[in-house]
Amino acid sequence: MENRTDTIAAISSATGLSGISIVRISGQEAFVVMQKIYRGVKGKTFEEIKNKQLGYGHIVDVRTGNIIDEVLVSKHRAPYSYTGEDVAEINCHGGQVATQAILQSVLDCGARLAEGGEFTKRAFLNGRIDLVQAEAVMDIIDAKTRASLQAAQNRLKGHLSDELKEIKTYLIDALAYIGVGIEYPEYDVEEAQEEAVFTLLAKAESKLRTLQKNAARGKILNEGLKVAIVGKPNAGKSMLLNALINRERAIVTDIAGTTRDTISEYINIRQIPVLIIDTAGIRSTEDVIEKIGVARSLEAIEEADIVLFVADGSRAWEEQDDEICARLKTKRVIYLINKSDIKIHPSVEERLSNKNLVILSARTKEGLEELEEKIVQEAGFSEEVLAAALSANARQEELIAKAAASLRNGQENLSRGMVVDLVEIDIRDCLESLYQITGQSVGEDIIDRIFANFCLGK
Ligand SMILES: Nc1nc2c(ncn2[C@@H]2O[C@H](COP(=O)(O)OP(=O)(O)OP(=O)(O)O)[C@@H](O)[C@H]2O)c(=O)[nH]1
Ligand SMILES: [Mg+2]
Image (cartoon, protein in one colour):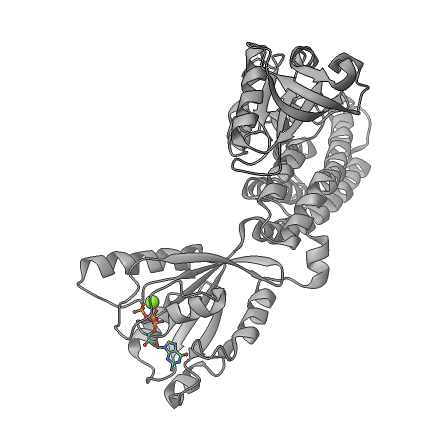
């Protein structure tokens, strides 16, 4: 791990021209650096600025003594700062030259250039926030819709961490009961003890189950709902993609086999980020490129949360359609009959009438709103669900599922009349997964991987 006592600095604002840029410094020497490069108006030094207050003045180049820019600086004394260390921020004009020159002057005074996410990593390592909250910071920056933002804010406020804490308390209490039995076997506590453990595990399980449901939805808010458009060639898949994203993104022609590769675009449907994936029409083919395209379509089906099966309403139902439908057995599917602006072939309607069906026209956009509504419904989102979504990322969701599996094991072992102290192993496994979520027990490699995804200056 890098030396945590050194002083780090970075440009925290985006690159490019802007009204204002921010250079952030954190660490033991942050104020010493500022003392060297800041010249307040009326001769005020950085030392004289009070905690949590702003100073107005200039930053100078330490090597030449020349003024670089007119600035506002702020001072946040440890431990009540973002990182938990002494933090100073310099607001300068937003040109890249001035900002870079200020950063250089800071580095010349002994600060080190921060790695991506290092400020937030320090906040975590200094115990200001847990890992769930640190990841929420990144999700706020990455939020794709207002609902994603709200869910990430909930996590930053600690809602998910609080829920996890409650579950951990039940588990630790259960371990305590088990401990009594092991340490004092001469007392006849077994029955009451078993019952207490049973009740506590049931409480933890119920909470964890709710969390698991929320986490799945939350992951969608973070990463987007994956919706794959599939069907035989010429059904109008690409035209449907274009209609949904409101842009001529994919090539549309009347030549079967136009789309060769998968094409994906994010759209916002009722505040849910949806990744729409157009795929190559599925058919058996000898064309080398098309073959690869079809293989990718099949992969897209595997990965999709929801599949839109597009039937060509202008033509009779074919064996090909049956073959594609057979591949969708395990998936959540919305069936579409496209080209409703022209006469729909009765065989198609007959084949799909008992399905979860939307009849639409990608050309005129008739039926598109109904489709959007259906996608939101299929994903399990309602206004209430959106408001409550605690959200979780893939890492957290995986650990929640792992914790739930260990807990179910424990419950099963207990109800099978297993020796109660064997259940202890399952409870400890469950706790371990929960500790990994919040970062109480997590390897350095995982921490490094998480923060490596952060942007510079955060
Ligand atoms: N009338 C009508 N024609 C449509 C509609 N949607 C698509 N088409 C036509 O159907 C043909 C095929 O459309 P595409 O969107 O390229 O079909 P695709 O499913 O992407 O085909 P591949 O990429 O070959 O798999 C084009 O000539 C479109 O103009 C529709 O809603 N109504
Ligand atoms: Mg296409």
